[in-house]
Structure formats: structure tokens, C-alpha cells
Image 1: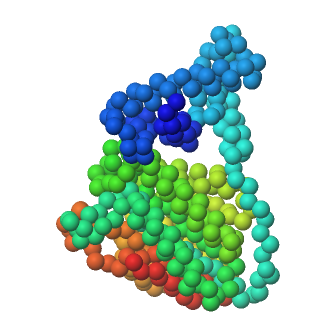
Image 2 (image 1 turned 30 degrees about the vertical axis):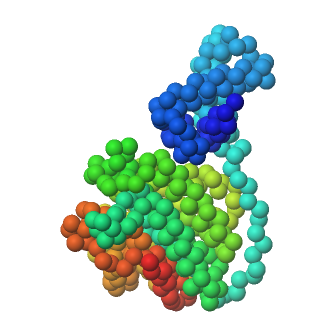
Image 3 (image 1 turned 90 degrees about the vertical axis):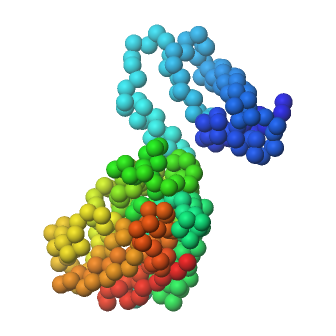
Length: 374
């Protein structure tokens, strides 16, 4: 058996079900003198034979005669089998319970971390990688700026580490991580935003989703070694649906971890109370800036009454603004993403590219801004 068949099976078990993509990867890895279509047909026949073999072994393991199999679903190494002759139909609850059981079986278990005693001078570290746009394509030939999915991921890694390095002089006892906010560039297979606006893109939508998932897991695992983390998800206009699915998958991934809490609802404005500070976050494509303070007072009235220093961090515009309103400071954040063709044509570029963070005292509100510039 040629070794590339083994590799094809490995890729399939790892979740790559597109035979064309498998064929492309095999040609690249093994330098095969075959067309993509030729290799796709071979791989399809081989994987089908392996699936039938795996089904036979699964039926033997479960004591189910092969001729009694009515339907089955095969996802990598896992089967769901529906047997003939049963009067009971598979219900949504059956499917749901099976999915939940499988997720629980595969959710990583994180050991408890013994934290040093924090004194009363602790601080909250806000880390907010805004408008990353994984999947955006910018080319210096057109815009003077190269940007793709790999650059996006690397900038977030570098930027978060840079914020942590700059925060070392503070006693951090809690981290607020802001997710969402156009973490993904598109929301449909047609390479458009949620509302249908075409985009210049790099990579397939599913590849970028998995890149973003891996990135968030990596970042959160790193952050919780510093302090317990609260993850807040902000829905956004480029990836309204896929961004929610991503946040929910991250929450499921860490369901066994006691050091991370989540707010992944679809509310467009979220609030977090720390000491004497009330911190609001929103993407920034909805409510008007001047309305955010009063919305905060109405939507978080109890926390409003308990706090003295209040802030709303917004995104979407990719540049820095900051304005003091009565009782609330509203501040927009910079983005690490590059300039695509549309923004270049309209002159929306040359803002500093950065990932930003903030230090909040329990008593004095925002006491430091941390910026990692690219």
C-alpha cells in the first residue's frame, strides 16, 4: 500500500472530509505525478473501502448484524447506527444527547491552578484583539500592505504576548478577554459578510474558522496561567453567525475548566463589573456613540449604581477615538488587520495597526493603556 493512502486516511480521521482538498495536500506532500482529479478518485475509492471495513468492525463490536443496518453516519472514527425493524424513530433529543455526550468525552480537562493570595491592590487586565479579520487578503502590490490568515494569527499571538509583557509591573488578579468583533472576515461560502458584501479573501471559510478556534484556545490557555479569565463575546457585522458558532465552540472546549467563565450570548452590548469599574463592550456598528452611556445606565443599572468609573470599549472603525461623556468614557480600539482593496481605494488606511489592552485598578478605574504596535 502506498504511504499516501495512509496519509489520506489520517487526514480524513482528523476531520478533513473534502476529497479534493485531501488530494491537493497529498500531491504537495508526496510530490505525486498525478492530477488532482485522478488522485481524488483514488482517495475516494480507498476511503469508501475503509469506511465499509470500519462499519463491519463497529457492527461486530456492538453485536449488530450488517444486514440490519438501516442508516449510519460516519464522522472520522465515530459511528451512529440506526437499525432496521425498530418502530422508534430517532428524535432530536437522541441526536442532541449523543452530541453532548461526545463533546463531554472529548472536552479537555484542565487541572486546578493554585493561585497565590492576591492583595487588595489587584488589577484587571483587559485584552482586546479587535477586528482581526482572519481570512482577509491584502496585497502590497495594490494597497502597500500584505495581510493574510497566517499574518492575522501571528499578530494576535505577538500582540497578546506583548500586552502581557507590558503588564508585568502590575498585580493582575483577573483578565477580561474580549472575543468576536470580526475575528473572521466572511460569513458565507460565497466569500461575503453576513449582509452579502463581497470581500477579498485568503483561504477557505472552514480553514479560517479552524485557525481562529485554534488561536483562541491557545491564547486562553496562555492567559489562564496568569489569572482567571472572563471571556466576553461581541457579535459583529462581518461574521454574525460564524462568530457566534466560534465563541460557542470555545465555551464548549473549556467546559471542564474552572478558571475561565464565558458570556457568549448574542447581546450586542455586554457589561463587566470589576471593583469600582464598570466596563462595557460592543462591536460599534449599531448604537450611536453618544447613546452608549445612557444605554449602559439602563441595561446594567445595578452595576451602574455600584461603580464610579465606567468605560465602553468599541471596535469596528479600526482607529483610535476616546471621548469623555457624563459618567462614561467611550473609546474605540485599533485593529491589527491590513488594508484591503476597498479601504485603499477609499483612503481608509495609514492608521496605526495594533492590539490594545487596559489595566483597571479596583479603586481608580483605568490606570494604564497598553499598546502593541505592528
